[in-house]
Image 1 (tube, rainbow, N blue to C red):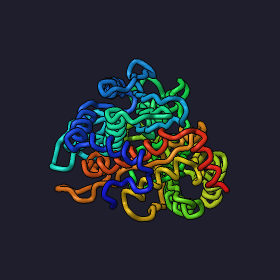
Image 2 (cartoon, rainbow, N blue to C red):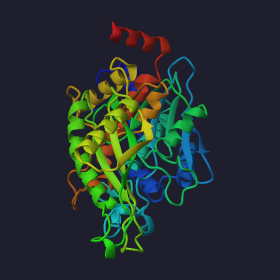
Image 3 (cartoon, rainbow, N blue to C red):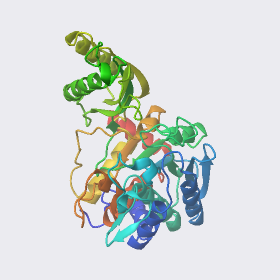
Length: 449
């Protein structure tokens, strides 16, 4: 890693970035992340956190506001205004947590009980901070806040606007049982942000993975319905018997094998799109004596930027048709109920080049591309609306005084990693919003040539 991560910048921009970096501190990062973790923000209820973020940005010199989607859900954004000659850049992070942090909604699906890290309360272990969403997404949101605050306090002379944006509804979920709108997740906040005019020329989304990613998977969801016979346990041996739940198990096992073949066919670029059977619903829990006539499965199928949702749908339907042909009497059908395309930013784009240069300067080596990714983010919303976007973030914490499983990885963040990501965001921002639009356009044209 280089001494300051600024190799490759000219003297003026190096000086501005250094001035901004002087405002980064572990104490301030700890204050920011604990402030975010301690305010619950499950998908659909981000309003209080959005207000907190807007107030915090405003106190550091940003024009900032919370942006309600309804009476419970809200985005937040702040703007440092340039002189109008340069490109505008958005530093973006979602702010909602995948789980809620309450037993009534999370248990038993998350496990037998809520651990300390699964609750919206920060705990500090030296360099580490734990709590619901401490890494993903709140640690990344705190880095965006820190970078924006540092650039503001340093008084960097901007040509373009620097926008810090924090989106509600970034998690892959529809409304919770207590939700008011069905479209509370799946990038609903990011879409609303753009629709309401918070728009830029380029964007960097802060999400996990210490690499610069320019493409990522989209996703399609299917509701799979498996038919059977409604009958009674006392009549199983006397009447036709075709248990939809047992049949659904056969379908789920078949799909789990098919997902592996599907992933092999569609692995390209940095993505390896996966699929899962995520839930099953059928029958009356209060009445174990009878079987249901139908059982439904939910399926999440990730798609690469190279295929459309309709192509994925036809592949999935063909897979079910093959299963029906091999299983006489099987009644299985599916409906696509959600679709978000995968997207890609051209590698010659200014933001891809600038973010990669920042990574290489911090690491002191050639950029390391991480392949085999199957995670989707709001970058698909940004790119899909025409904003060239790259993703960069922190790696999962590897060393801790506790075992790191999936939830701990989401809920544990390193202050040292936060500082490194903040330095990356500062350098990329200074490299972008202190230039003229003509200068950036010329650089992009040279990359294409």
